Image (cartoon, rainbow, N blue to C red; front, top):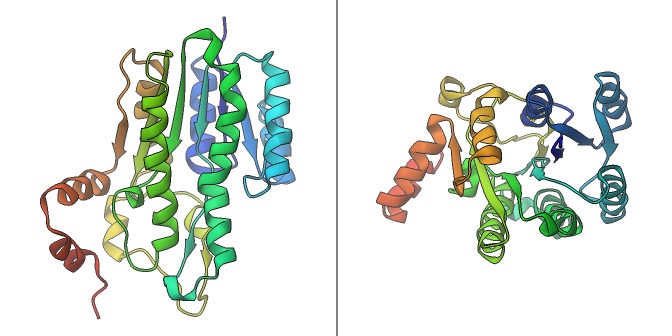
Length: 258
């Protein structure tokens, strides 16, 4: 029986690469995106595409209903990949901006996962995978809102993994560092005249979206998937430094140089 996988955020980057790869591997891919133009393009590429805006609870409900109908209430995997970044000093961000950041990167993930779990639990197998970030491990100036949403996603995934223990469902996190995608172009800057930019050295460690694919396949297919899959040297390095360095020393590394 062909296994059905839902992937969110398939318009570009990691989501699009994952959709192409998993379809080529024989999975039935249901690809979601936020814009009508992207829906048309994904449909033209032969995907079963659905509109879903994680900022909008009603949109998530509608997409979940469509997914359940299309799959006959049987789903193997959910790859919660969609998200975006709100950048800027925390003092410059309104409550509404923070709520929007969490709506896309966290609340929508919870809502969609909760709606789709009944299509997974009865079958004693399945995977729930999240795209987190190196910013789910460390926070840097100007990226506090984005990091907070990814820290929340990490904690949520840990709790869900333990709550689903023994059910046959596994919960995994993929933690990319710098990935070449449209993510940076779509960042919402709270201070457009002083945008938060990646340090120049980050370009040396940037990988294409396809770099996550071996980790995604392992998370989907290994009988004992890992809880976390770091991707890029930056994530491996920061995870190591987070473990060994006092906060004061890590702050000195991560603070911007003036």
